[in-house]
Amino acid sequence: MNFTDRYKRLNQIRFALVRMVEIPDMQKYALRWKRIGDGYAKIGMECTAAICYSNWRRYAAIGTGVHVRLEVENVLSILAM
Image: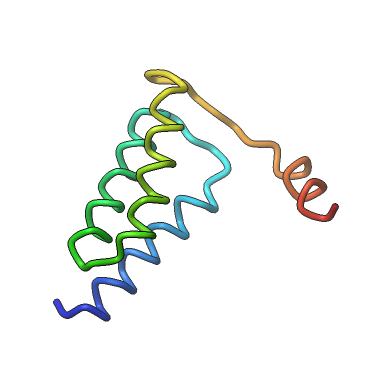
C-alpha cells in the first residue's frame, strides 16, 4: 500500500470516528484514536498523529466501559453558533 492509499484509508477511519454519535465503550474508542495516530506517525504525518494522540488521551481518561450517547441536536445547535 502506497502513501496515498494509506493516507486515504486513515482519513476514512478518522472521519468515521469523528462522526460517531454513540460510543458503546470509551476505552475501545480511545484505542482506535491511538491506532490511527500510530498509522499517521508511520507515514510521517506527525501533526495529524499528535491530534489523534491528544484525542486518545482525552477519551481514555473518561473511563473504562463508559457508554456515551451524544445528543446530535445539541451538537448541531452548538455548531450553528
